[in-house]
Length: 371
Image 1 (cartoon, helix red, strand yellow):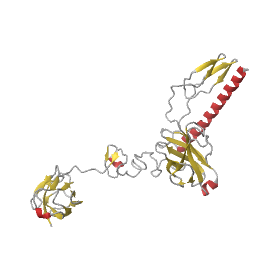
Image 2: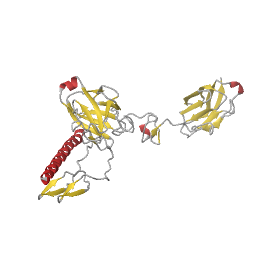
Image 3: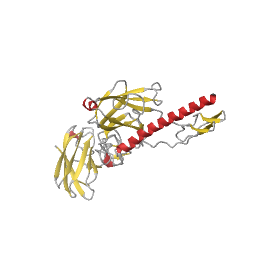
Image 4: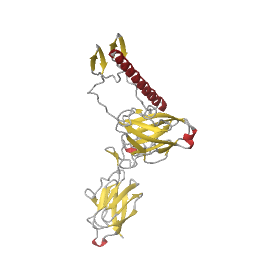
């Protein structure tokens, strides 16, 4: 009698594991096939090949349904080895299971709503069908749930809502912990992919007619260096965002992987002093110069400086200037000899630093006056 009960339990376990595996395989294949064959493919992952342990019960082999090629501990019962599933060395990198619960998916924690892995460990995906016209005309309602055990409502359940609603497809947003539902507006009946970046809880809905990641989907994907910027396709990133090369940045300056506006190496500590007012000084067209030691005492706290190049070549020669204590700063370009430029809001109490930005192939002669 004990052997008969044992056989029924083992057969039931094998049947259940096989059904779970087939369901997972079907969803993964849909994600892999849905996105296409370009560089933005979503790799839903291959179903792990099984090393199946067997036991002999009354002369017959029973499939115990072991997956993930794990070597598990066994114990002997009535002369047959039963897979106990014990493996203290198994490491689970991501213990969470994620679900998109909508009318178009499933309101249960099952294969219809469960997100699957992609080739990016942080990104989960779900392919689903919008089949009813009212889901397009009236919109859908969704929320996202996370559990610590597959299909278990009680195991560390966390509910997420979107910070903004409705979500217009194609498009996305950011999840935050909280009950309730967010609206989703689909453009038409069809097949869609939901992508969730679990590292920052950003998400996007993409229709299959779309070309995968875009520069407006609110996710860091494709060739972007930061969210929706950088790379060969998107706009350049603002200061403070991630980059790889200078062209990823609006400032055209990528330093240690971060976009920033370059700080000029021209400063009062290294600049060539132009001396007193009216004095002529010959410098390179890419020199760093300043007016400091020769300031007339009567200039006071606010003066306009007239900077003149009395001789030179290699035009045009752009320049920038800054007077830190007076607040004066700006730029200009010498386009010819005897080209006078007015530098406003100059304070005689600190240096005015002038950064010449020519190509350095020629020399120019500078002098200044105040008025």
